[in-house]
Image (cartoon, rainbow over all chains, first blue to last red):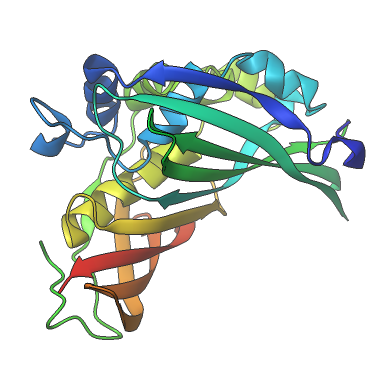
Length: 141
Length: 139
């Protein structure tokens, strides 16, 4: 199970180039046909960082297992983004993730484990582009 | 864009956006596009074993709908903050309507900052994903 000792731990870093086809496929999966997400000067939809983080972060799913969460009951409880500017197709972003908080809540159906992940994305000039805060929840077996 | 700095006011409703109804095909397409391999959204047996009646929509799919809705209201590049809590599950067959209201308006350098409560609701009127956003409308 997740432990309080994990708070503050860096979750690894990663970097990737924002790919035009990846952005277009993401917008299509949302049924969002805004022309801003295609062609020259394209930017990415507001929730695209979730797809980018999964793609760019070293470790991927293994990282989630490392958190001690139960994969069978893992759900995404909350998501928060802060945008400095839109993500642009063709740019390279570097990500740094950390475990911001670990806590549990016990109710009639048992104990739920909460892990809060925070990720910062910077462009190749070192300027921040977006921040993400992600609350993951699983039921303790 | 639907919201203008000169006319936006507290209590104003954002133009609703209707998405769906949710199909299993939409869920099968969203997972790979978002890099989410969780079978709970595509495999009914897996979902049943985890204690659900069947597959349900990714919370981030609904948040994505809300993102389109906010971008329609404020314009590309004009959303500063966006948060969502996945309070209730959205199921295949659900028609999802994105709604929102303006809760505060204040001025900052060069922009009018607009706070909104946003949410998705389905055909029964039940609110599923609850969120908020800060929009920065150019003045």
